[in-house]
Image 1 (cartoon, rainbow, N blue to C red):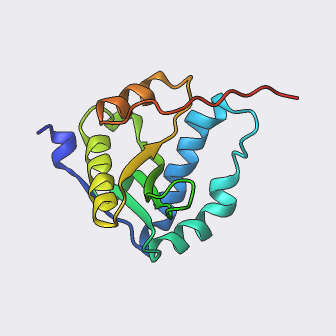
Image 2 (cartoon, rainbow, N blue to C red; image 1 turned 60 degrees about the vertical axis):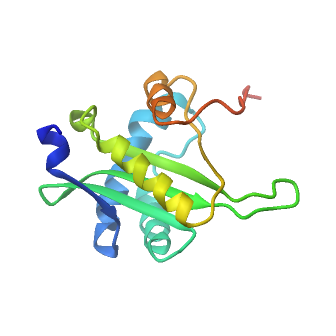
Length: 160
């Protein structure tokens, strides 16, 4: 185990972690969506994140994890459990967002976040898990594939 991994704790988020979740979400938006999606609202994390994260902490169908190192939030993962429907009669856990500070990548923190997500998904009755990544983010796609995800569909878009 690397020093980076040993000193990083992955745990469920609490209300005291909302500011750290907002900061990580803002960094994710700036680094990923901000350079890949001209339609994304880069101000969303600061404007809507506090309420959204605070509400999700106590929601049994949502998962909010933080990676903490030396008392500071250095990463996060959010997930949601979808209900079964007539068209898709299984519950699917969706990994909504994940971020680890660039300096800590490659030390196992992301893999630990995903492993916790899979454990939560299984205990909540999900039969499958899914994640969406930008096609242009080859590093994220490779990371998710190394952690068990595989391609399911492709979304194509054109500006009007």
